Structures are given as C-alpha cells and as structure tokens.
Amino acid sequence: MRKTPSTKVARDPHRRHRRAPPVASRPRAAVSAAVPPRMPLAVVILAAGEGKRMKSALPKVLQPLAGRPLLKHVIDTARALKPAAVHVVYGHGGEQVRGALNDEGVSWILQQPRLGTGHAVQQAMPRIAADQLVLVLYGDVPLISRATLTRLLALAGPRALGLLTMRTDHPGGYGRIVRDARGRVVRIVEHQDANARELKLTECNTGVLAAPAGLLRKWLARLGNSNSQREYYLTDVIAMAVKDKIPVRPLIAPTLTEVLGVNDKAQLAYLETAWRQRSAHALMLAGVTVADPARLDVRGTLSHGADVFLDVNVVLAGRVVLGDGVRVGAGCIIRDSEIGAGTEVFPHCVIEDAAVGPGCLIGPFARLRPGARLARGVHIGNFVEVKNARVGDESKANHLAYVGDCELGKRVNIGAGTIIANYDGANKHRSVIGDDAHTGSNSVLVAPITVGAGATIGAGSTVTQEVPPGKLTVARARQQVIEGWKRPVKPRK
Ligand code: UD1
Ligand code: CA
Image 1 (cartoon, rainbow, N blue to C red):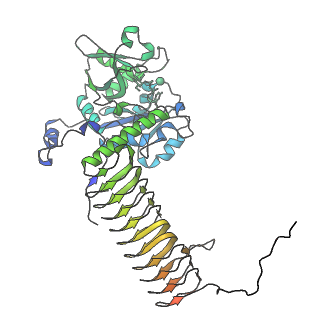
Image 2: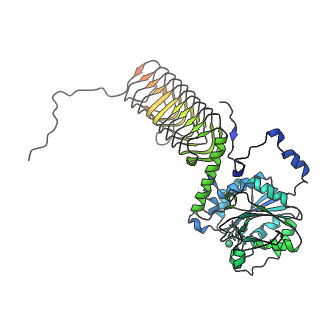
Image 3: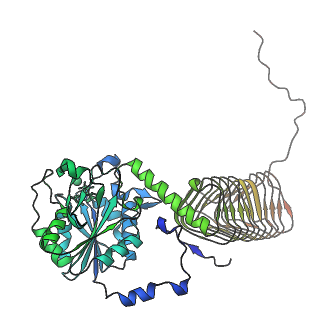
C-alpha cells in the first residue's frame, strides 16, 4: 500500500484554528539563528506524590491517559525539548513506577521523606550542573504542551527565571501569584498561607518553572518550612529571586487543560475527553471523516490515507495505519495494525497486530489476532477468528470459523463452522491449504495437515491425513436408517 501521511496527534489545542504557514516560510530557522545558544536543559519531573485520591493499586502517575501512563506523557514532552537529562523524583513505594518506566532512560531520584516541592527539586540538584537550565514539571500534569514550554524556556536564562502561571475563576487550593503595582511578579503565596486579599487573586501558580541551576541550588538551600504546612515550598524561590534582582518572567498558560493536574478519576476522565477532542479535531483537519468526534478514541498514533471514514465508538490503539478509503464500522477496536486501501471493516471487529490487505471485507464481529496477514480482497465474516495465519488473495471465511496457524492459498473457501484444530494440548501445528480448496461446513482439520489445491472437503468431515488436490474428501460416518426402531414411551400413570 502507498505510504500515507502521518497525522501524529497534535498536542497543542490552541494551534487548531491557526493555519500553519507553508513550510518554506516557517520562521523556525530564522529564530534559532537570532536567539543565543540555549543553556543545556535539565528537566526535573516531580512525581513523589502518593495519589491517594485515585483509590487504586496502580500509582497515580501510572494511570493511563490515552493509553499511556500520565508520567510517560510528561517524559515524552520533556524529551521533545532535547534536554541534557530528564530526572524523575519519585516517592516511597514508587518502585512500581520505576519498574514500569524503566526503559525510558531517565534518571530516577528517590525523595524520602516527602517534605514539599522545594525539597523534591533539591533532591535532583546534585545531578545537575550549575550552567544548566532547570525546568520543573509535574508527573501528574500530563497535557503540558511542548509549544508552551518552548516559550517558557525562551524567557529564562543565566540570570532570569520563567514562571508558568494560569488564570482561573476557581483558584481554590492553588498558590496565588502576587504582582506589584507595576505588574511584576514579586512572590507566590500558597492558598493555605494566603490572607483574604490574596485569596481573591485569580492568577495562580501552575508549578512549572524554569530557572538557572546555579542560582536555584543556592535558593533551595535557603528554604525554610515555617509555613502552615511545614513544607519546603519551591514557590518561595520566587521571592528570593526578586530579592536577588533576578527577573521573574511570567507566562500565562494559553489553555487550562495543559496545566491541569490529575488527582482523581474524574479529573483523569476530564483530560481524556480533552485529549479525545483534540486528536479527533486534528484528524478531521487532516481529512478523516469522523462520525462523531466525541466517540472516537485514538490511543496512539494513526497514519492514514485520503477519505478514511471512522464510525462511532472506534478505538484505535498503538500504531495504526489506514490506507485510502478505509471505512471502519461502529464499535471496532484496532490495535497496532495496518489496513489496506479500500478495505471495509464492518461493526464490532477486534483487530490486533494484524495486516489486512486492500479491498478486503472484515466483519461484522470478526476477530483478527496477532499474526493475521490477509492479502487482497479477502472476506472474513461474522464470528470468524484468524490467528497467526496467511490468507491469500480473495480467500473467504464468511461465518463461524477458527483459522489459526496456517497458510491459505488464493480463492480458498472456508465453510461455515470450519475449525483448524491446531493445538494438541502441548504444541501448535501449522497447516497448509492450497489455492481454490473448499472446506465444507462444520469440518475439522486436525493440524498439521495439507489440503491440496482445488480439494473439496465434505461437510462435517474430520480430516486427519493429507487431503489430495482436486478431489472430494469425506471423512464422516455414513448416514444410516434403522428400520423398525421405536421411540421409547413413558409408562402411563
Ligand atoms: C503546588 C504549588 C502551588 C501550585 C500547585 C499547582 C508549592 C509549594 N505549591 O501545590 O503553588 O498552585 O502545585 O498544582 O509548590 N511533590 C513531590 N514531592 C513533594 C511534594 C510534592 O514530588 O514532597 C509533587 C507531587 O507529586 C505533585 C507536585 O509535586 O506532582 C505538586 O504537589 P501537590 O501536593 O499536588 O501541589 P501543592 O503542594 O498542593
Ligand atoms: Ca501539597
């Protein structure tokens, strides 16, 4: 199939309505030439919180959003900034987190006990050189966008601090940004420590900031915990910077969703909805027809051709490739699979690790399991399961069949109820069925078996030996009629 353009899910919702300039006129090259070389970047992701409100055996930062752990979203976004290192501060009991994300190549730092956000960042500082820029992110704020972070980093430097803030009508719980009469940020006051006037402030701290490591190290060492929570607040470094005449440059987050944290399952679902809308929107702008953007879940990356149609309640997970004109019916789940041009998948199919060629008809209610490789024009109908099988051009299995561990030639017809019995209780055996072979309804092919080209197997046969080509093979008991037989009758009471 032809290579189709990849529509990676856009992660920045406010870019939606802005038309990207043509590639040639993009200012990227000009900007990077004008801006002085950036300081090496060290990202510190705070993830030591317990997440009790999730009420789950799975740690909070491992809860999946769009099929990926929350923390993985943050790590992926951090990586996109090309940092020198990504440090993850994790807490007591966080071995599960480390284990799950062990292949991420991040540096893990145990914070024990947990004495506040300032204390958490302090744990990472021994691994960060003084000439680096430190970007603090939260492991439970998954949708932070690369675009916003790039803007924030541009505000920070060897003698400047970048602070990401947000405006909200519901500031309850957040640290408030205190500005002076000239609008300069002077400090952050935590909700618990704020007076009545400060509580009315609606600009809040997102927790995300960028600061030069040398100065940050110095400020962190001076933090105290004489506040209402007895914690070492990272937020106290803002007043220290101001005192040291280091400018604090605020950036107001362009959207709230990207700075929202996840504390409970309701907030998790809220961000999942935001993700769903965002990914569906990007796909529609890329030309995909989506029956209802509120009922499409893309939990991974989708590459697609032109004129793809996705009906309601479709879930696409992992890496999915859909060719030109592919139609996916309601309620289908497709994971890590490729579907060729012009193929129609009827409702309620489950397709995983499969490759479907062009012009096929799949379902309704078909299951393609790992290793299913269908060539061109194949029909797989209702209640048919295909696993680890190559199916040649224009072969059909239209009803109620199990097609596993086998090679099917071209134009093979698998009759309703055919089972390829591949498993003897210990081993799986492979079968080969030649071109134009037909298996009768309710036949059992006990593997390993070879069915010759053009062979026909009579309905209800159980074949255990080689089936010769071009002939009818019947392997069932002959029909008998028992003369004079009488049906037993119940004795009358
Ligand atoms: C913090 C900020 C507050 C801001 C809010 C945004 C401080 C003192 N307050 O509030 O101004 O409005 O975030 O959500 O920074 N964490 C650790 N170790 C700790 C404590 C926290 O790793 O010892 C992590 C948590 O896992 C979480 C993040 O830091 O990812 C923030 O902690 P949380 O308790 O949610 O924030 P607050 O302290 O309430
Ligand atoms: Ca707290």
